[in-house]
Length: 246
Picture 1 (cartoon, rainbow, N blue to C red):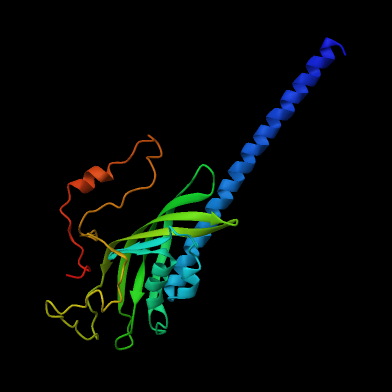
Picture 2: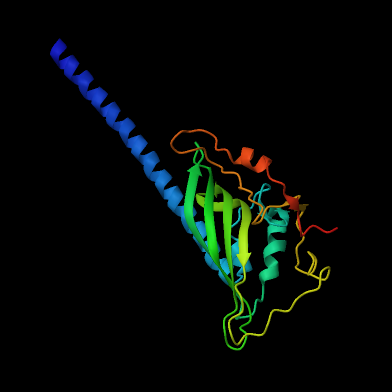
C-alpha cells in the first residue's frame, strides 16, 4: 500500500472516530434532556396528586430507599414510613377541600453519572376548605421546594422533598361571610391536633417574615461561584419553631 493510500485511510479512521465521539456526546445530551423532562413530569404529577390529597399516588412518587425523607415547616419525616405517616393525614378529604400548589420555575441539576439529580421549584397556589354562605373561602400560599431525585430501574423518583413556606395568606372576609373566629392565646391547635409528628423537629421558624433563604443546591450559572445565602441567613434572628411541642 502506497503512502497516499495509507494517509487517506488514516484520515478516514480519524473522521470515523470523531463522528463516534460526537454521537456519544449527543446521546448523552439527549439522555440528559429526557431525564430533565421525566423529572419535571414527576414533580408536576406530585402537585396534581397533592391537590386532592391522593395519598397513595403521592407516596408512590417516592423511591424505596433508606435515604428517603420529607421536610416541612415543622420538621423532617424519615424513610417511606415517615413519608406515609405525613401524607396519610390527607386521606378521605371532603370534596370541598382543595389544595392546589403549582410546581413552577424549575432549575434541575443532574449528577455526573445521571443517576441522581437535584431541583429547585416555586410552589404557588390556594387552599380552600368548606365554603361559607356558598362563597369560596381561600388561603393563598407561596413555597419553595428543594428536591433530590434518584433513578431506579430507569424511572425517576423522589428521594428527598424539602419544603419552605414563604407565606400562607388568608384575605379579609368579603361581605356576606361570617367573621373570623378569634382563638384565645394559648388555645391554638398544637402539633398533635394537626397530626404533625416529624422524626426530627425543626429548630427554627423559617417562614415569612423571617427572611430566611432556603439554600440553593446550585452555584451561580454565570460566575460558577457559591451564592451568598448562608452569609445572609447567619445574620437573621430566627424564632423557635412554633410547631415544636414545648
